[in-house]
Length: 263
Image 1 (spheres, helix red, strand yellow):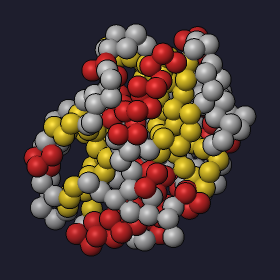
Image 2: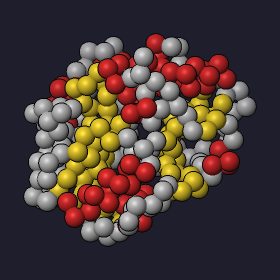
Image 3: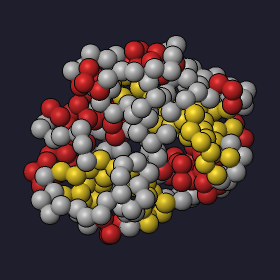
Image 4: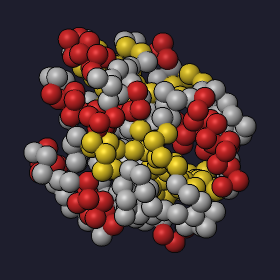
């Protein structure tokens, strides 16, 4: 398995990360891997639902900034990572059937259908390098949480907004807001800073990360829209099959994050 210590030194390329996934050597989180490259959240859905889902993303661009949509039945993201295979090149996949989440998989080759369409959605992991350069830590104190905020529906797709929470110092929170505003295709600036109850963030049953009993008084919780939001929509829509990345286990592209940022 690729070590996070090596990744932290910037010695892991996107191609190496994807190959490790494909060969079954990496099944853990992609945080800290291929620093400086855009990571994406994945949604795979049948063509019959693809327009409704694309409309859902368009109406909720903060949480679902679409960077690429593949041709029907084609698992190769030709724009973001030519030669890659979305069936094998993520470390872990979440599978939903009829509104129920099934056990995660490390490959979806056996589930692949000729009518599948894949959506790659920008991820906040992509701006970690920019945050680190600005003096904002990115290696600890991060969660993925459900909120009581509702997304804008599109057809059968609807549900609560999911957010990424990071714990930062007050000074880091200000810097992080300034830095991430330059990355609108990776969720942009925070949508909330401060009291989690204002947005109804569920601290006790996170999508990713341990339950939170109490927030230290010395830090500020900062919340960004999160590309895990479509997974809640999948549960609500109860489509027959929908496959996504497992939270924190994204797809690493060949696109440098700095080239997707605003000046």
